[in-house]
Image (cartoon, rainbow, N blue to C red; front, side, top):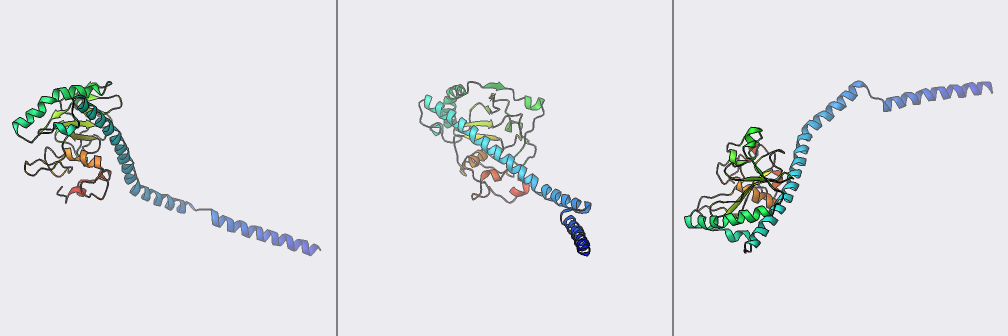
Length: 262
């Protein structure tokens, strides 16, 4: 009996130590293992985080654009209706000819007056504040915009709403009506063409006969280039690949555009 008790105690002790040692081997990590794991996590994060952040930012801009554009279209349609027309394209006239330009400009004062009434909380904004506050003015790929008026033209009255939506007064351009606007205003970035800054145009065309191109490509230097981004954004079409959405274009570097003829 005594030998049996001793034997059992010995067996329990050996089993306990064995299982305890085995358990520690299975659950414990050395400092080296922890550091290696953290290093791997850091590398993966460094590779994926910029892409995730840019995707999140692009989605925010897309949602904001849709909201602002909806308000803009409602204001335009109410203006057109009050003036006795059916749609904004009723104001479009032929290109470059003096009589056509004058025809559009003749209705512009009334259009601007009625259009501004659609925004009762609007306040005039001084475009020179862009200079005073060193606000960014960027191209589609993030480079410095050479033309300051691409962000805010001092020779056009500019207005801002409490929600940050900034727009310049409608103007006549080659027999059409156009509006520069910034979906989140000057104080909230990125202040980049095709990201949060767009140009609405009552026309949508690509006329090789007159030399007017509405594009969305930073590699092409043309005064009408920025007009095209709005049309691509509203249709949600990538200007380089129509099978992909427009907002995938954002935050791409210049190499992405290099071989494009758009």
